[in-house]
Length: 122
Image (cartoon, rainbow, N blue to C red; front, side, top):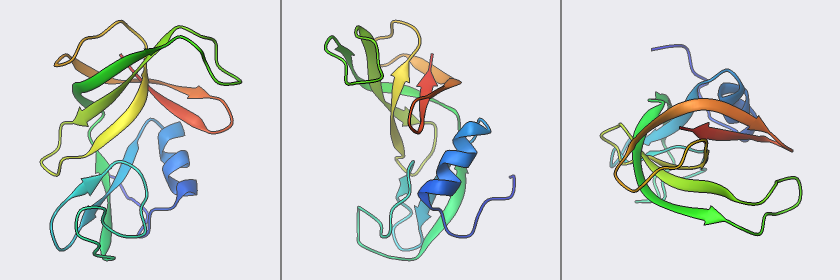
């Protein structure tokens, strides 16, 4: 596994994403994994979290089409919640490059730069 920061902050998460890496956290108490930085485990509240590198592949858990986009985005794009291929239940919300359905396998294929980078799976 590559070197990862001891404490995962938004700054390190963004830097990892720009390098094509998904960084997350694993709870030392319950082994729950998250795909974005937290101060405490959302499952049990434990504050002892280990920074980990997550897989860049996963399965579509839920998806929707955005027809009225927020500023800086063009309308009619798909987003999804992706179950990452990890035993700790990590999920990430991401932009989708291709038309996908629930249950399909996807992988990190790009990073969309807006104000902060946005993961793009396809």
